Image 1 (cartoon, rainbow, N blue to C red):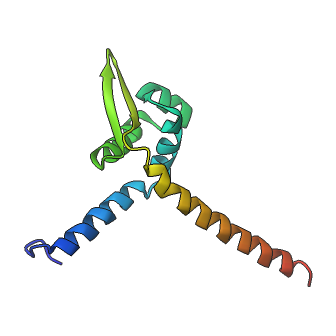
Image 2 (cartoon, rainbow, N blue to C red):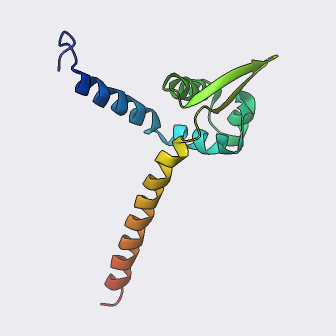
Length: 116
């Protein structure tokens, strides 16, 4: 697919889905989402709690906001971020379950290796 090619409806849907998943495909962004699970937080608090430099955190927050995962609001000098649609956790939960099963299978195989 080149830039001059007009996207079909199906291709546009796949691109939208891929862009959404790309926004999730970074450990810091997943940490931010998990951190905001308990509620809105100001950027300064996230910098200290998550240990991410402010410039990097701002880029990750912008990506998550542009994809509609987060929302922001300004209160005086603070910018607060929160989860825009909590159904994002319905997306992340099955991924965690798949990974738990994979880890369990690996542990089972490793325990069998130890018997030899």
